Length: 441
Ligand SMILES: Cc1cc2nc3c(=O)[nH]c(=O)nc-3n(C[C@H](O)[C@H](O)[C@H](O)COP(=O)(O)O)c2cc1C
Image (cartoon, rainbow, N blue to C red; front, side):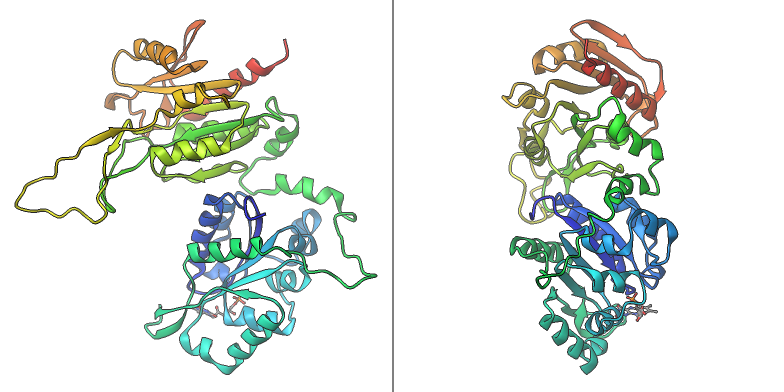
């Protein structure tokens, strides 16, 4: 259950709301699905759009929204998760929870749920130590709510003491521990039945279409698209190879091309897993995104994500890493600059193309600055892939970081050169080509 759990995150109205966004990323990094509820006060600190962009789903804010109620009512929202996490749990939210008050979406969901609740309080030290909050805390513990934090330290208001929200990694650890502990559903007494799945069978299917930034055609394609039923693995972005805890070796890859392919594959109905190196672009919607740093982490994540029908290796993986990265920051000294010994990184494309779990279709990318096609032909042979998408990334082309790409598709059948296209167009054409390869003949 702890792997790939469905978590409903309720973000209350406190300074620590921004950490709620980090928490979404942390959960997603660990492979969990997150749905977000933002309280009215929470929306004073962060926007529903940020929550929706990071969860890849609608951000639920309003108890009386007709659209939300039509597609996923507050009762279903309260049940359609393995665990509810409240972070930050403000003094106000804790008071409502402890007293059964249900006067907005968050508090109604918390009262209606049959799932376990983990709360991460965050508030001013006086608010936390106030007898009312401590009473509420004791009541909630007695009701079965689990708590993580608060930590002690300097607060945003300048005071010092307990009240700082636990760090996102600690909250995610506590959530996973809660999930592993089992008993995620709180049983009802005999003779009662609150299973709403029976009553609202269409709601779950409809929810996929609801993500604000996803056009309806995606939800339609999810069932009927040319890649429906296919699992699609893709790597994207650069890797960071640490020199010491603060420095690293990397390259100029932005991840735009790989992420565009992930999005296009999801639009075509594939079940997409994206293994992304460190990038500054959002995770594509309806794609399971795993964030990694180094080449070795990327290989491990790819291996974990197999089997897949299709694998596209679009990441610009560093060929080398520093053989032994320093534990502490390397200091300038009289000895001059340090000598960095490099070690070769694993070749992810070749490893997977030659592995027992080789996907049916394996596509590699070759970023070259000279003799683009020649090098791509050599790579095709050496790595054992079905296709190499080769592009010229010399600085004059503006490909790295830019929005356009000129690619050549090199396969055993020959070379197909495409004109300069936007990265989205390259993605759509490539996905169409992949879908054609899977068409029954
Ligand atoms: C700038 C500012 C910061 C606040 N920070 C907190 C906080 O960290 N914790 C808290 O419990 N309340 C905090 N509050 C008060 C809550 O926003 C207020 O009690 C609100 O009603 C909580 O709404 P909620 O139930 O949606 O979380 C803060 C208010 C302001 C104006």
